[in-house]
Image (cartoon, rainbow, N blue to C red; front, side, top):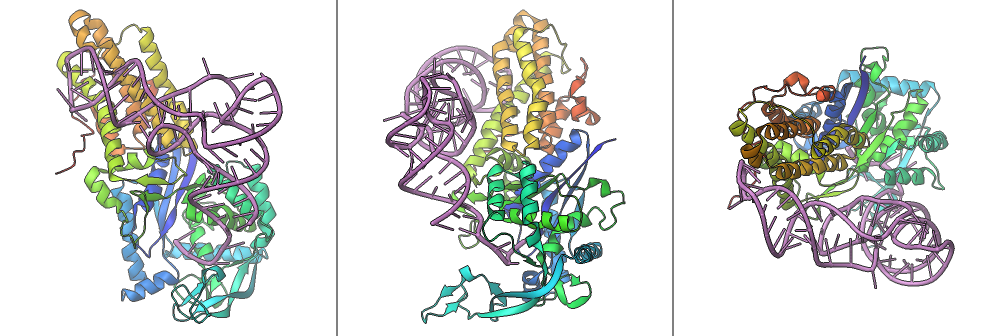
Length: 512
RNA sequence: GGCGGUGUAGCUCAGCGGUAGAGCAGGGGAAUCAUAAUCCCUUGGUCGGUGGUUCAAAUCCGCCCACCGCUACCA
């Protein structure tokens, strides 16, 4: 009986083109999903698109399209990105699906039945010209001393009828839950922020959960004048995907979710609003919510106006999907912001992938092809150096696994690279090219140790670089059905024929 | 303003009470199996400032400086 593991990315809002941040979230989640699968879990990995709301309604109108047609097109772009980034999601949910509409309405009714919804008024500064509400703080004072929208449009203080969720009654329960479960929110700094927010003197307010100002949304049960505002519509997707409101179906075992992976911009929604909703609906809370950081581009904030928005598809085309995946998870502490620069990506590629790992595999395999008959060499008695290397190798699955469990991807990779470097030091010290002339038995034993090492490293790196590691494991003679972590204990039989070696990570040379 | 975080070698960062660490960059050497890749040695820091606690402080506490985040209806 495999242990279920359910993880999610956010659903991506379809009013813009995918950028590197979207790819980042998907890739990080994908590494986790692949890791858990190799580690013997039954994984359900969900991603998808968020397709309702006024902005989408407007974007569709601007494009001269019906909203559904518009979202069909943009959603397909996100699905395509997932495919191109080699994301192994088990499902792709769209909030315009009929099953999601049913799930949201069931969620609404449950909240209403439990007495947590009431009809009130949503007040705010509204600009008719912009068709948009603004926060008090967003308003600016114009030359005439009037308060206007940041766009310069006039605003008026209006009240719109709206249903509210009694979120205020869950503040203390949320605080208690977060304090009793130190791992519920990661990373730690973010957890502090959420607690600080919950403990602020004003406390938690009720939440406006419907709108009458647009139509592109899920109708509120029993009141067609309203559609649901983003909260219930978007967050409920995590339940829709596993069959909610039917919690007895084949996927129901995946709840509560093990991890919601989100960007830091939407942590609040997942760490406050969503848990409050679930409490109010008598549904178990997810085990963990982790917020990752953002990428700057060559030291500058990514923005459309600067024009430095990076399309992950272009990077993948130039450098390859696996080097891109590697870079994004290697370069920065997951949870902190990172900086993408072309130079640093190329440095990671050339130094760590080509020189350290790729070359270690290549020098070992080509030596075996030329001097050891192209088969898995005979193992021998272990020297102290051999035992040290083997100990480092065998510790990896645990130490790397522990890092992955904390979403410390760069630490996981650094842990592996310490051993990659140790492999290069080992081959230099043992010098099989010298042993070739003096001690063929020992030469084979050294080569066998190197292959055993490379097999473990490649196996553990599969989640990060699936295609490249598949190639490497092919060259190492590891059968496709012996690449999970349980198979790590079973060495490749001596004498196994190895395919002709071919470089897996070429150096990247800038075209002139 | 309030709350939280960060400030350690040229760069990116780890260490978080017990004689300053890694990678990259720089310098010297070795080796030649390999994608001219690798390995070894090495230069370099009064650990933001200041006061305190302690036998002992990057590491704990106070204050100051700089930068960043959060301060709700923008997924």
